[in-house]
Structures are given as C-alpha cells and as structure tokens.
Image 1 (cartoon, one colour):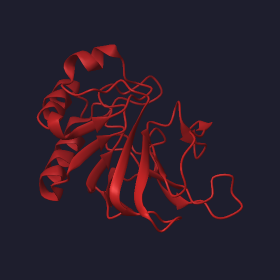
Image 2 (tube, helix red, strand yellow):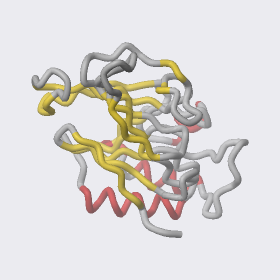
Image 3 (cartoon, one colour):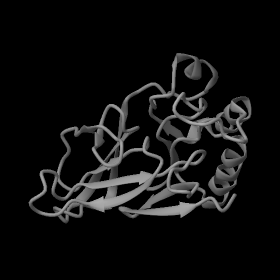
Length: 194
C-alpha cells in the first residue's frame, strides 16, 4: 500500500497545485487528506495564494483516490462542494502487507485523524488517544509541523508510531510538506521553497 498523506491546505491554491503535481509523479494508491482543506481559519493569516474554489476543483479531480477526515476549520459547506466524504473525525485503514513493527506479524492499523478531537498531545494537538492495537500508527495533522516518532518501552503508548505530514498551505516549521507511507514506513517530503 502506497499512500500520499497531506494536511492543512487551508485554501492555498498554488501549494495545492504543487501537491497535485507530486500526486501525479508519486502515483499513490490513495491520497489521505487530514483536514483543514479550504478555509484558512480565524487563527491563521490569509494565505497569499488563498483561492478555495481552485482548491475545490483540484481536489475533486482526484476524488476517487481520496480518503479524508474533518479538520477543525472544515464545515458542512465544505462537504457540499467536495466530491468525497470529509466530515468524519477519524478513519481507519488496515495495511495487510505491512510487517507489524511490534508483533512481527502481517498487518498494521493506521488511525487517521486531524488532531483536534483525537491526537497524541504533541505541539498543539489534543492529548486524546484512541485505543490502538500494538504496532499501530496515529496519523494526524492540525499542528502544521512534521512529526515522526515511535514511542519506546515505558511510554503509555509504547510501540505506537505518530506521524504528522505538516502543512501544505500554512506550515509552522517553514516546510510546505506532505508524507509518503509505503511498506509500513513513513517519510516526510517537501513541496519546495516559496
């Protein structure tokens, strides 16, 4: 299973266009969108390239590939204009081919969420963990910062990997980024410079 994971586009059309080019090159099985797709939100400055109607058009062009969850800036009106479901607080994917990093067996659960209802408590994500099986991954957005860590023994969530692809449109770590998941591994990638 090859996934392209992106979050927090916030209506930034030029950065979304870069993401679309990457999707074409990367050719993932599915595109995972972790919320905050169209609206910039009251806590963020308006992106320089703010054009939600252009973002709608681009995202709808890949609707059959998309698995999405709702971000804190997403609303029912977003669902009215997007051609894929985007209002769930979480989604769960099962990768039957991945080697579980804890058990060594086949299969790994990926818990997909935005980070404001469920999250690992890193940066400004909520500290509210779902019940996850050994070796699972908690994949979230919301903080606009890259995260990739696996909790060690002794941690309440030992063996769980947390992954945040950062933000496409309004990064808080200065990296307009996304992620790739393949063969049970996560990787951060940049969409380039301003």
